[in-house]
Image 1 (cartoon, helix red, strand yellow):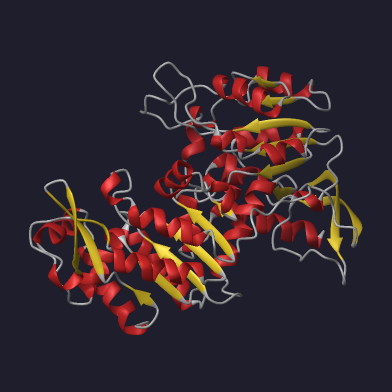
Image 2 (cartoon, helix red, strand yellow; image 1 turned 180 degrees about the vertical axis):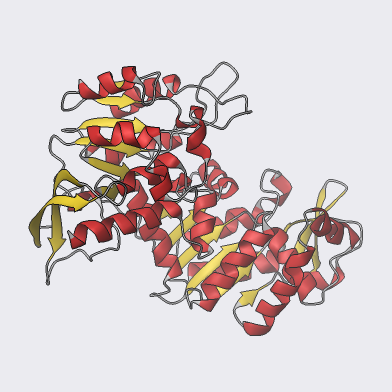
Amino acid sequence: MNRGPTRSSGKADNHQTKVNLALFLSPINNAYIALVSTLTIPIPGGKRELKDYLVMDDITLDNKRVLVRVDFNSPMDPAGNILDDKRIKSHLETLRALEDCRVVLMAHQSRAGKKDFTTMEAHAKLATKILRREVTYVDDIFGSHALEMIKSLEPGEVLLLENTRFYAEENMNRSPADHAKSHMVKRLAPLFDLFINDAFAVSHRSHLSVVGFTELLPSVAGILMDKEITALDKGLKGHEHPTVFALGGTKADDSIKVTQNVLSRGGADRVLTSGVVATVFMMASGLDVGEANRKFVEDQEYLDQIPIAAKLLKEYPDKIAIPKDVALNKNGERVEVSVNKIPPDLPIADIGLETVVEFSKALRESKVAVLNGPTGIFENELFKLGTTELLKAATESGYSIAGGGHTVAAIEKLGLEPKFSHVSIGGGASITYLSGDPLPGIEALKKAAERYRKA
């Protein structure tokens, strides 16, 4: 049965020794900067493994001035009201662990050109209710007003700075070293003892507020960030067998890249395909998916994925599962046919019952189940069967991980979130991580950890 969500105590392991790190050499100006922090290093016999990045348990947090990158980016209505507080709530554990600190939060909302590209004022008000602790909105990022507010902070107080994307340099993909030379980092970094990146969902972007401070400040992963990495690693590293991936949705190129990565590194025992990626694999195997489905693949510009899928099928014939039957939308009715008998004019809208049974069994019997993407048009009552049953089956696995916007929405609609071991809200960052591509935000934390462990 599913073991349920894992929780961090937020307290340091008893089996640790402490080392004072007083100085480190800045790569920016070759000057020694006094950044006193206490690092707890697990000793032999300790319970917690030494990771290649630092976490909050590694640092003595009391009374520190802490800069935290969070992801408060949320859907908003035209009146400026936040429609979903999930992103803000996801940081609750991290922020509660900082209750004795002087905390400054950095976040963004949407991007330039979008109707919901606005200030962080509503986010501060909602965060105050969620955290049950005043979160003061500052309509500035690194100007004189922001600096004065930060300097006047008392232990236990929290500020939320203005939308980081109001500052043009925030959106530029640059190296941490280049970002560290920015006015934002130069003005803010000297005011803090520690930088925490708790924004996994934006860590696939090498943006200023994500990577720039790691060059000048002791930098650690927040509790949410660490949970996301730990959960996804459980699926990627393939330490438990069988590990089963179920990949669906409309982004076939992403799913194929994930398939390639998890199979080549031995992280998956089986990959169950549905959605558009299944159509691509069916075409790669020589099946006639019908003109309507072939045209959809062409319109989505996925024809170039077919030879990649064909190569994967040749290399891993027993590990990639394509549907045996599919559900079609025929005049508003669900009609199921074998994949060998798909008519030319009907679009695939879900996997068929035989495939649902086979895939559900594989997920139910797995030690680790990783799901990303619905099996079909979940929003339509006629075609929600595959998504519903696979999600339910995954909750009966040893450890269940789910990600992707539509998948998370389906889980919430079905009330299954408490039954999953981990539901990722990382979006594009989760896919990037599962694809094997480095995430700049995480890589920056790793390099920061190397510097402090050598100091």
